[in-house]
Image 1: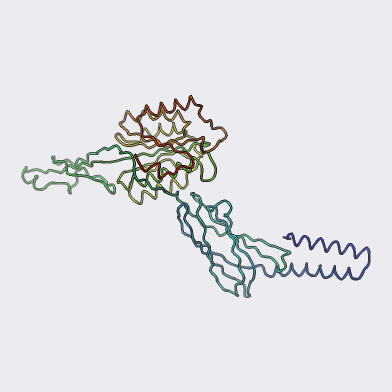
Image 2 (image 1 turned 120 degrees about the vertical axis):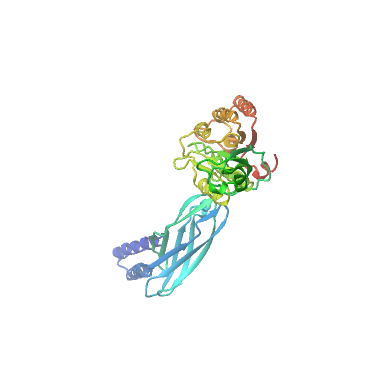
Length: 409
């Protein structure tokens, strides 16, 4: 492919040929031959210098937003001669919009030699990303021609949402579940205490037999246990298509994801069981769990979510009402124009579920097609309905320092 310089040279060749043909001036013919030879030699040089290489990219599988990532590129020269002056362009979609293409200039690689190159790049935005392909760009010494070849070098990376620090959070509702001496799969981190004894029943585990009491009563007696002080939190999110307002990382969805991940981490660090409910086209529920392994399940879920769901938040809450346990806590992240969702929260109070509501101010994130901002009258109705829920409320606007918003209760 001709570069702009090559197009200029080709134009000069054509003009010189036309002048020489019409004037029959020897010197013009000489200039024409010189430029034509330069043009031809540059082409053959470019073709000769086109590298035959094998490229391998080494990059970690996961990262967090704003993490600087080191990427290693191994380049193997497959030719029995050296290659010089070519460029590799790697495509890295998680980077900032103006840095998605990374350019590496190769000065020389000897015959059959393998060289290693590194570059660092900022993981700008969460997501499940495909890195690549890699383009090999070669040109002649004078810059008249440029040739591109695409290498199918593909890697995959999950970029988790960034956290912010939460130093305080409203008290959670507490529940308890009786174990009654029956063998049950233990959940990591469970807290259970001795509750009493009762007569052995078929199906009870041998390990729960209380041998001193059995000897004293002349029949098998088993121990009863109670799991107490169980804190279970359901986080409900809005992934309805069209409800993502804003641009880049400053959108209602990105704020929701960052808030949900930070709350989940804080609660699991505090010993609570956490589940997340949010309906997209691919994923729906991350069931209850705790500990580091469950946190990464939550983060993987949040890394991939998009506002492409068919369910409204109100419909999502209807589904959540069947899943959220009695005497647990519900955290809802919602837009401030969603009055229908507030109506759906009333049913949770009947089940003794404590409500924590994070409200995002849509007007601060900008305007989106099909999204209506509340009038003053509707805003007052929204606030009154919110007060009627007796919920703890966080109000979030674009640009807020989220750590400060969550530093006191």
